[in-house]
Length: 424
Image (cartoon, rainbow, N blue to C red):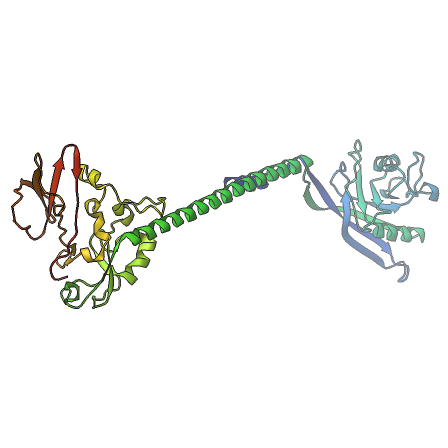
């Protein structure tokens, strides 16, 4: 944008102040006796056909028109040229054709014989009506004008018939003609070329960057799409059966289609424990990868980076997830999404059912081994550990997870079995 403004500014600058020409036109009025109507009737013709010379004084002049006395000296290039001038004391105007010598010589030879003005008519030009500003340095006191070729030949034809012609020269219009200098043309041309090169380079750079960004965006979208497909494949799918809590009137509708759940509907359970119709939420997850309700990112929740290998289906290490802080909301329950039959939904909170972890049936307490029970409340997230007797038959409370651990030496063994709630 700055380059365009600079170029416009350059175009608006006046580089032609020194390259201008001022010239004046001249009104030429000729008066003569019409031979066809008799000598008593005068005929007058006036036109703005003349043009003052460059060094000529811009003033009026008048007199009888006279040609050179000898046809051989018609161009008045000889210093001894004689004109058919009237009697001494009368003003006269020399009429000379263009050519054979300089304007200065013609004007000087006529002025040497006391001509009040010199009129040079154009000859041999491609444009018959063309006139120029004649240069005649050193002769600033003689009125000199140029008239077109047709006008000059008309006057010559009258004089050759011995008709007296009077001419009156008056100042016409002032004109100012500007010429573009070569320096300004070169400067503007170079500036334009440089600005075009800069603009072209900027456009090439812009479109290359745009192409690179578009490719990077497409690659990122493909990676996110692959990661979303992998995450969706890990999410649990469940079929609603008759009598399930989801079919009750007070149960929330699907947030995508705003319709209730009916028997045989296939639903998708997200890591945030919200569920939706599978046909409704799958396209949404492919495009947005977030829960439609709570906006939880399923990729982060499942620990799947966008550029992860789609063949890597190995779950996170359970022991490290217990020993350290959870990396997502379902780190400790990643196995929940594997088996459809291991989940029951609690309508008030849409929570995954109680998962019970029991002691390995193949192992019994040995000497040096201790049994303890850990209860995790799913609502508060608090846990409590109590030493337990092998014969303790206490049942877990609703809403808790009970896990029995057996520790022996430096090895820790954990086996977790999933069991559905009663009624599923």
